Image (cartoon, rainbow, N blue to C red; front, side, top):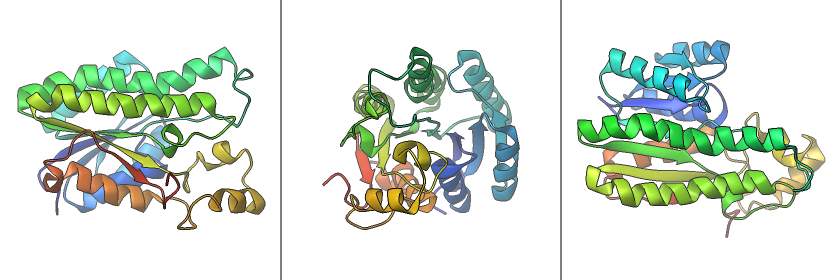
Length: 246
């Protein structure tokens, strides 16, 4: 029960790594609020873990504002905020991706962190502190060809995490990130281009431990970084990648 008494908001918490983090946080005693654009999945996952949910578009400032107001009206505070929502794109030459796809990619993967920070940070300051966790990627550390703009969006998140950590430390707000390797989530096929046994084997050959990340892996790592056990840790971008980035 390492998170007993804490309130946690998880964007993109209705599937994949976000759902794994939500389940772990709930099991460790947190009051969990899932923010996701998929209402049906958000309702299902929140019911399974005994949490709450909002239908939220993290790339839209008004939608993010409504989310934060709802959480504070119901739970009075946010101790942990997880920026997990993200999208990818199919492998494609860097000069072939459409402008519309690029704009959407950075709206969800980068602008969302800017928007949530504008709404959450002032509240955390007033409450005396808190923890922000950004879900980045090994793509921001060890980029792969034909995913250039996705790689760049995750590299942006890694740099933002470190800068946020330095700026917010005097306000007792810790900011860390997790860098998962590709896992058993809805985004897996976008990284590989196709989800076939052959494509999986090629990808797994680049991971020394020989398997993909799982939602449980991310939940365990997130729980530690967001718990009081990590009270001296900020600005860390932790690879959860089976050795992929070595």
